[in-house]
Length: 536
Image (cartoon, rainbow, N blue to C red; front, top):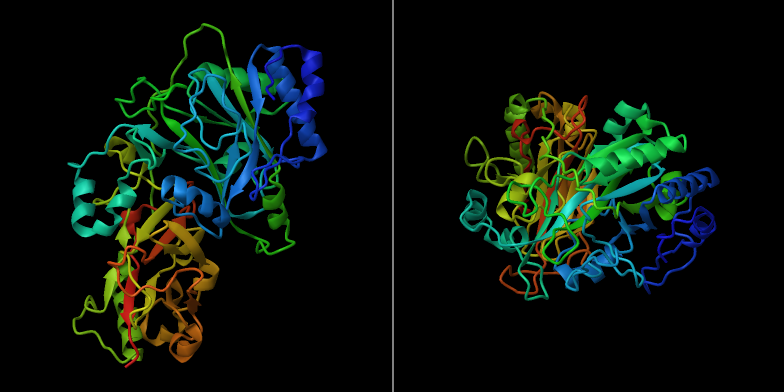
């Protein structure tokens, strides 16, 4: 059902009927997706009425979670679960396509099963704005939201330095970072690349005074005129301008030749995806908590608004990414080597060289010089950025196996104690599915190096955490700081060459460097070290 009618009376009475609910099992459209408090529902009516009164075409969508269950649907479609964080499931939306909008059959249900008439990915009309509003989540370590370039017509650059480095050093990951959309003969590449700076809780608080548990408004648009028009409509219904934030979608050239987006509704245009992240709620997020209820209800609304007049669009220039900084962790490097050495000594396998490089490998900095996991940089070479963002750093291991007689440990600096993060997540990933199966957060990592305090100058700034198939069997060697990776999480595999093998990959994310609005500058961080251990 579409809100194209510009008759005020008809619109007023239809709006409350345009509500759908999504069922992950059937894709059916049940009763009420928005779960809005009465005051917010009133604002929805006021905003829709004002926009339609001004002659704009408006449709209303709904919000949903992308969960581990959705991976069963998205993996056959895209051969990926997007490196999801199971502790902070993606919040995304479904919208009605415009009548002339091309819906790619190859990406239908790319983010889960949806009811007929809705899509989870979309193209931008050149004179469109997407308006998101509702009650923001309860207090937490982080929330952020942004639009991503999801797929694009074209080819990736096999001559780029990044492609060549990954091919030489991480050949098993090449198909993850450079890949076409499957199940189609059309040459579209998977991008999932950020477009610019996100809006997050720090940015919202700086502008609006507070972020959590508040009604806030977000505009995403490739058209300066539409930003002003939507803001004007919001002001006309008494929405305070400081509660409204804009995400500009750059589109200075229609073909994207300058790094901007290919805006349009046809098959050749760029395809987009919206994602909101919400991590480490202060109440723990357990069943029955306020934060769990917020995720169940998702009191958020999405409107698509467009101008159908003949005026020319007013595009945005390319974004300038915010500068990132961090506390330099290089002075902690000697202690990190000592921690690796002490852990190996405890397991009866001392290091043979002074830097313990024979016993541990460094995580790979994905935002460093070899692999630049930054949306605009990924876009230049056709690289799959796998949902990157400027609010975090990314450190990753190569693939490894848990079923060859070894136990693994990670030794690293803890960003929440060095001043480089509001929270840290050590994500356990199924590399085959590109799926996060578990997350070990900074609260769990805190003080896990305390058993080695005698060897370290600053033990509280480090963590040492183990992963094994059976943590109970090695409890005396791990001090209980161990995560059991079950066969349900990751099937047994002893041979990486097995085409059905699901290798393990670890990813460390550090969100929002303290005192800033963005993630830490990765080149100033010490990469964690992956230690392979065997009982002697």
